[in-house]
Length: 343
Image 1 (cartoon, helix red, strand yellow):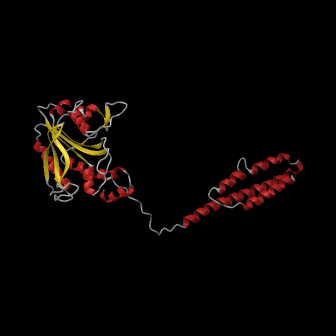
Image 2 (image 1 turned 135 degrees about the horizontal axis):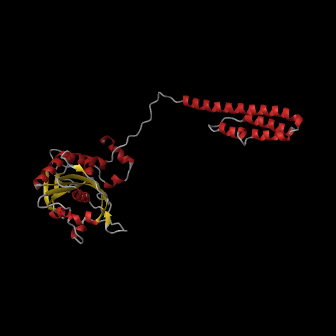
């Protein structure tokens, strides 16, 4: 019994020196001394080895040690709580709060939304289509049959497992799908990301964004197309902007044209951006080719329509004075936070 009593005295000194160190000290103390496999339980198991005449005395000493240990545990818990309170009280609530950083829309999203808003005011509905497309919707239905030389105008990413599938080269695939599932009149604007196998540089990228429009109805004319695009250009670039149409070629429209506006940076005087011409090309357009209407099951004798398409990156570069298209996809917060005020 004397060995056990010496052990208890030694444990008392150890417990008295146990000090609060962190929020877990109280729990560590409880597990070590008062847990189901703790020291107090271990000492109680010694009762069976104590002679009968000394059991009462040993029981009292053991009970006193248990109460001493529990008292220490309670003081540790209070110390832990008071420590938290004292730390909490050290906060100065009169100090200004930390500034919360504001998020912002991407400049491409800002420009795309501006374009869509203008056409929605003209009654165009927004339509979206898949970015991974089959050859028919991306090329053949648009009057580009297999081996057509115009296919070389667009360097295409094909899916290796199935060459009939590809990353769409324009959002015209959405126009085809809309003509397939809806009857005229059809008036849609189709935004989205497109992909072309081009060298990445400050002026071009292997993916970019387009917005294309389509209007199909009876007696739609080229004059309707021009007035629609005149309205868009004036709303987007200002009432004083000058506009011109130039004949062009696209397999899916006939006749076809490209639309230029007077350079917004030099006011038409000529600069490096407009290559000293005073004009900037902003979109391509034309009357929907009869073959495209027939491919989608629309009577080309009864219905006509126009289509147009423009990139989003180029007007964004001009509007925000950005000189490198790669900045749009680098996710540099220092670049993106500049557009917080543009929301």
